[in-house]
Length: 170
Length: 156
Image (cartoon, rainbow over all chains, first blue to last red):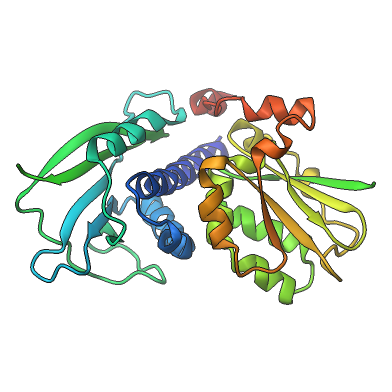
């Protein structure tokens, strides 16, 4: 029985990590940006997300969108995949993905000019193990932006990942 | 034509990049130029595996010896996979001239073609090109992603 429980936990981590990456790729593409940069970084992204989900250190994976040609304020948008480690306290442990939540996120956010670029930031708990290819950084300010939570898009074991996007306040 | 088929357990048993690494090691028993070319497209191959395109349509390797067709298994099918489905090949299909064809959904075709443009032995084909090539693959293409009841698995 112990082996089964360990496998269930590992399967949930792999499922959630894979579908966060798949969903982020859909958002990048759906918002009119090139996925080439993400495909180049896939291995590093997967290594970090999987490792920190497994240790319980990943708070959120963040996709920051910016315009490198704007020297005054390059911020254009942001997407958060926030992890809830106790999403399924009483759940039955299904592994699932709701692509409709991701589609709705893309639809509500709209697209970016193709000149925009993006980067990935993992928000982690203090003391998390290092993973090759990742370095420390500071997130851009979200001042002047509104956060819109769309809903939980991915579930597995006790884990849930919800999606939110940021748009400049009117 | 002789065909060798393999079914590789993927998500949630392996990550997408672990799945691709397993496939690379299966079809390139020796470390060399072929394996390096395949490893260089790990990102785009992992994206295709994550989308489960390789579940219903095979990765096709035409080279030395019999053609090799590799499917990936996902969800329950991966968890219940038979390790014999991953048995090593009895030949090295990349020992000579070879071409590897990746299946891809139409929505992702452009980005995938761009991603492999510098890989001389890699081709990309639309799922629609072979959606009706056999009743099995056509059926798998329209099957929704499975939901796994892990609680039931724990109790078994």
